[in-house]
Image 1 (cartoon, rainbow, N blue to C red):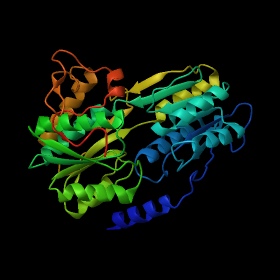
Image 2 (image 1 turned 120 degrees about the horizontal axis):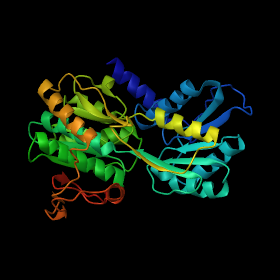
Image 3 (image 1 turned 90 degrees about the vertical axis):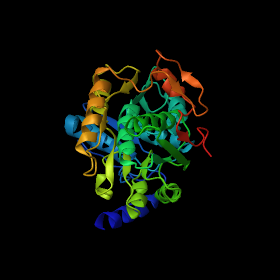
Image 4 (image 1 turned 135 degrees about the horizontal axis):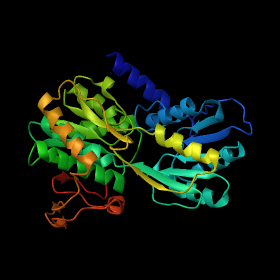
Length: 367
């Protein structure tokens, strides 16, 4: 009960914040010749207990690792679109020399600003555009999504799984595909029904979407959203739930399964250090379970040891490269072969994927 109340209060407070939220600085407190200023731009509040909180934990990790040689700033609740450019301009005026944009919809503004400010380093999460002074970074979350799908499939008695999805973009489509393929390994014939919210962070809308799926009879539910509101809905009807972005188990421990998590701190530290010592170069980084960027949250008490062992074995296969979830034959929703036997999707293919695998209920174009 305490967790539920805390969740409600936190989310209401977060939604009441202004577009740019607040800023926080650390390190020396004042800039000097030996101090670099680094900034992060967030689409949601740092208290979302999901995507933004994970990135902000990465920012704090930078502070811990680099101490007085870095001064960090963040802007939260920044809407995707034109407002990003103004936020970037403000950060540059404040002396920030490396800026991390952490939402897909920031990409165009970040790229345009990179062209205007060649002396500033830009880093964009989850996009595709690069420049001499702008790099891209993300991780193979689909690998951990597949493992999460295995937990969902094992937890579902009917093979009817629900998924609350944000936007119909490639990173979300491949997430849903991976979860579906994973679920079908532990529950052959399982389906995943999708409801789109068209928002990254809106706890009310997320909860309503989850409730709509639960009313249709799904008996396990996952999410790709930035908050644990889906778990709040699942807890009310005691349906197993998987989270995303961060370890969200505290909100509904009795129904928690597991979830994909990100460890941004080491990457952020490496890139800030490179900006400091002059070795920074534009890159398109795609982290993995093997290098520690991607992980799996702790299992809930309801996940049987035999299921945990099965998932752990598959995780080791993913790490070693002896298994890859997007290897053919793979069929789309219509039953047509999209990936022939003996071939596999590349990272470039995954960045452009616009189709659902067989077993997904819903449209990859959104609704």
